Amino acid sequence: MEDEVDRLVAAWRRERPDLDVEPLEVLSRVSRLARHLDRARRLAFTEHGLEPWEFDVLTSLRRAGAPYQLSPGQLLTQTLVTSGTMTNRIDRLTKKGLVERLPDPNDRRGVLVRLTREGQDRADQSLAGLLDQERALLAELSRAQRAELAGLLRQLTAPFDNVPGPG
Image 1 (spheres, rainbow, N blue to C red):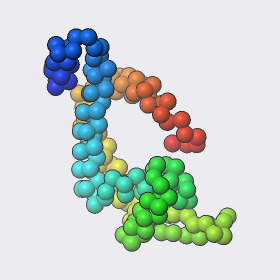
Image 2 (image 1 turned 90 degrees about the vertical axis):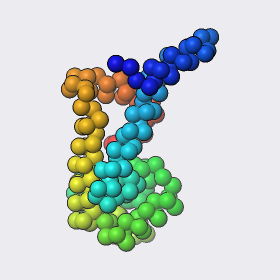
Image 3 (image 1 turned 135 degrees about the vertical axis):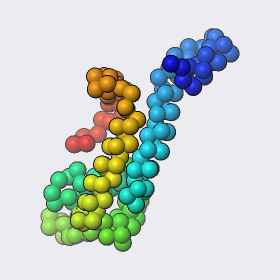
């Protein structure tokens, strides 16, 4: 079975035999797969009325476990955005009734962001939709192949993910 990357690599080998283009065989496929995954994610989120950033915030809160709340600082760490961006996102999600702000009992000046019941339902439904899309992308691989691929990709991504705390 040949794919577009095979054709791209063959062309570069023909045109630039002086270069080792082997990295393209892996990373061009990862890049192409990422584009397909991005489309699948957007479709899953759109079906549940969410933008990708909304999914990120809601599922960060959902993964936190009951009572499904985090400080804005914890949300920043999990979603990798600036504090101004997070404030704007929390405001928008609050207006949609998907999260609520509560006073932080441990910090009189602080707030906690909590998932509402509607927010929890949307997070759960969109996650289920996303998993359906992702299963379809992986359908050609056996369980053993998926496990092997996950391990290999972990080796490549782990150095970029050296962030303390649970992930």
